[in-house]
View 1 (cartoon, rainbow, N blue to C red):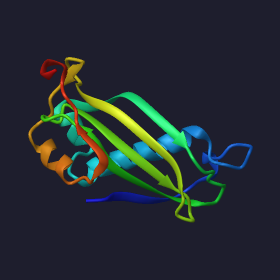
View 2 (view 1 turned 60 degrees about the horizontal axis):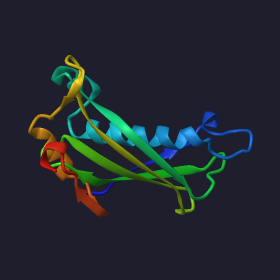
View 3 (view 1 turned 180 degrees about the vertical axis):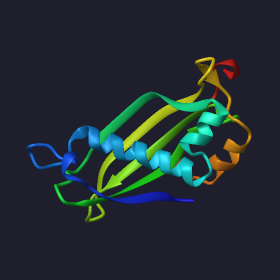
View 4 (view 1 turned 60 degrees about the vertical axis):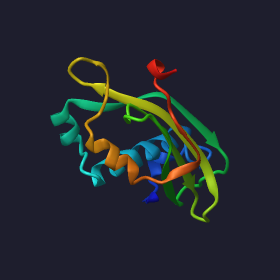
Length: 149
């Protein structure tokens, strides 16, 4: 499934140059991830019940075209990689301006943390089903865990 959301940008997303400030791109990508999980039964409250949460190791943003004040944007998300047990994952977000031109690409690399032990953990089995619903990027890879290398 392709997962995408169109947003109406807001005044606070922009800088004095009248284009979207760099951190706003990443904020919209994070919002898409949260909404994806929410739509698949993993709300913030559900994460709390499971004592698990997502963490990021790395976030890479490539800026390609300006987004100007007042434009609407569309953010698409796909799976770029995942380990067999869904312990580690990579998402790719593409942000398109109102004209449909690719304006930025954001890649995030992360895992799951046990919120009580404060250690990396494997997610419940139902996470596999949720990840299977997301489109895979053309560069999709299976992420090996250190113990598998």
